[in-house]
Length: 116
Image 1: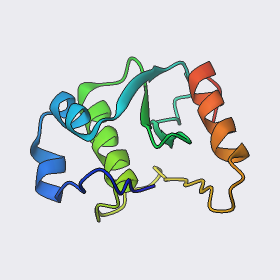
Image 2: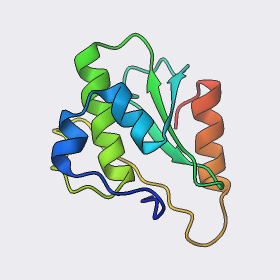
Image 3: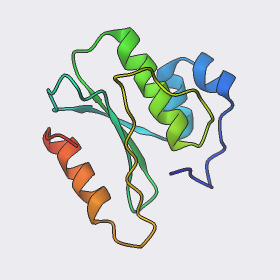
Image 4: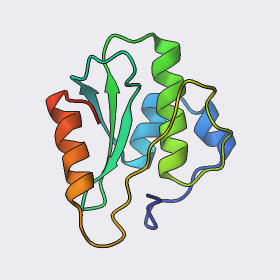
């Protein structure tokens, strides 16, 4: 999902920059997700235009929001970070074949509050 036009942030920059500043610098759109499933921690979706959307569930602690957002952004930009501890898992849907139906469906669900 790494964007070639955007510089890859260093691990230090990704982890130390205030999250609102980081999101702005990276050109990411942050949306509150309507997904209420307690097992959903967030998602990053790359639109056909290249825009990255970071969708985070509302009502979570600041620590959870900040940690998961940075982790998802690291994956989106190809920054090497250690995996999250169980039970958290990361699922990646790629659109390498030109068929964007899976990515489009994931974005639709994130926007409508469904499960990804």
